[in-house]
Image (cartoon, rainbow, N blue to C red; front, side, top):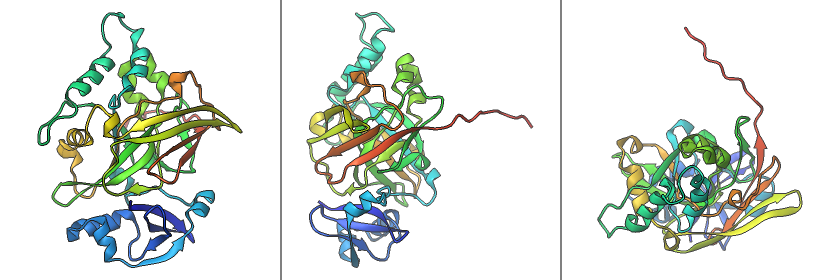
Length: 329
């Protein structure tokens, strides 16, 4: 399967094409995956067709680039404010369990929580027939491109946060064409990273809990995503793995189709602004928080899943406290 990466080579960001088996090579004539996508859209070509018209240059050692922390985000925008970061929750089979337990104490045990009701709506109506519109999912905003971290970089939790927990999942990357059409560039591994303690305090604080950094794996997997994706999520403290559990994704393990999630994101004109990039997190059912893990600064989150070849690894850090004051004019 074709995958595209952005790698720092001799201090300069370069686009790299790789099929996951043979040598990874620099794509000459483009400065970023964003530029390559713009060229492909303008020419009416797929990525593969555009690459067939491109010159592939020197070989890049991806293992060495990973060790030296030269693997960059798989796509970036020249203006991060035009890179919208959002996602959907309660989209995976089993994803309601932890959320339901989290919110159960706030209300009668006989009455389903709003989280469980939302999940069941997805089970019943999240996979409509072709051409039909399914039920809308839970949706949240995480920020813009300035919030995104590459593999090897720290995920920094705000000083005021009550928790910094991993969310291993897959994400779709999109570019809006000149006529407002969203083009899916591909899929990547992701750590959606949230404050689960804040969310547990009151589910209406979900929006606050999601305004955090997030990490994207280095590979942009081009084409269709397999129906079944199985990976592993780990939390490593020093030399000890304190949490390790498989996670599932792909439509066979989801209560919504990817097309339905995409429709309900891009049905808003605001999110079809020409030239904007989007990353959309598809959700997860696996959290170390649900297993009673309390993360600490220095813990390393490691996420891997086939067909992706390279893992996503990020350490947890906590920002220094920054007083906020509002001045009047």
